[in-house]
Image (cartoon, rainbow, N blue to C red; front, side, top):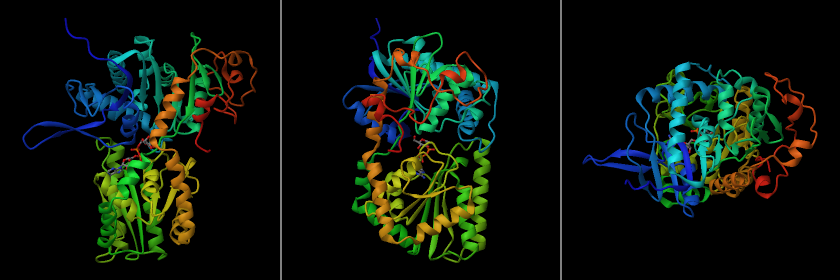
Length: 520
Ligand code: ADQ
């Protein structure tokens, strides 16, 4: 008789496992923990209960055998070369990603990509069903796994299922473009609790259920047709490991490295910094345009002012990303060619990944941090920057289209589409007196310190544990205001039963009250 596999009370399912494969010089395979907020948050949760993580190990082909690493049981899910192309690069990153980010580039629809997405989601659900203990809590992550909640519920009705969306959830008018919109919503409705970065994202989801499925909705709840189950959707914004990162940023070697970076750039009066995955959502082109205009109008210029742009390689096999990289590199070349000086380029462009220490040093070295996405679920770079500024130095320019802006509204806010406005904001961030900037930085740091990633995970799990199992009496009987929206696909309960007015997500009791939006 084979020994039964161990099972776990807490299971995370995410597209990627939190480790990277490293082959040492003597050919040994080692797994290195990939740094990231989610892993750090889960470490603190998994210290008190044994946990498993289900995800892809990063190489196409057969998956390695399950193994344990730093107290977490890792359960790899295999993806074939075709599945990496169709489920991951295709449907996840070239269909869902553009739709969920305001169609900044057009989305591509292919039926075979969808079919691969379904197959892989089923495989994840089966893998989770295998490792989850009776009555376990399962926390599914992100847009790559939207069908897992319902597929898993069919296999394992005993488990409690949560899902968290790291990216925005689009307005129904955009979501409705998806040929598989109903299947995606139904996939998510298998969960007990759905978490989003902003209240607006949760509202968009509830509205999509009402208008596209004809589901009954009330405030932050959707009633699943054919069952008496209710699903709650609310905002629980993610954060960073404030204490861990601040400790790193206070290390003498990291602070020395920050000074060294400035010195190697010729000790500019103003060092501006951008750090992004090279993604069209991040507004890198808009930022460069504003900077280029400020230089050509001679309002700023090297060597007194310089910009370091770190652009992490990303999704290089997706066309839109290849095109973007070409455009950015051409723009940087033009700016340096036309506006740089010998020994003082206007833009220092770096297409690399860096260790955490180097990132912390860069953040400390930068006088102005430019975070200008056109759309971003949260944007952790903004929170990491303020975390590293224990000296209260620096200024954060932050796009209103990031989730982070809903919490960090004291930052220098910008609309990156408005190039003139962005230029003014950059100048303001440079010229505001140091004392005022310190006051702002203090407030920003207080927010991130009070709402760190450990608190995010605790709040999420509390909201999942408290999620409704059966309809609340008032949800069936209380008349609700008439919604003004016109349903795209009128259903049995369309506009009349749905109301997500301003009281959205509030007064749901302690644990649930905690889980409402971020503008506290
Ligand atoms: P991302 O789109 O990847 O995440 P972001 O939140 O900024 O965006 O996180 C990027 C992470 O990568 C940060 O921790 C940053 O420090 C790190 N990083 C960036 N460039 C790097 C480099 N060159 N070297 C090393 N590290 C680098 C998605 C959503 C976001 C959401 C997060 C978390 O798109 O909106 O905030 O998930 O939910």
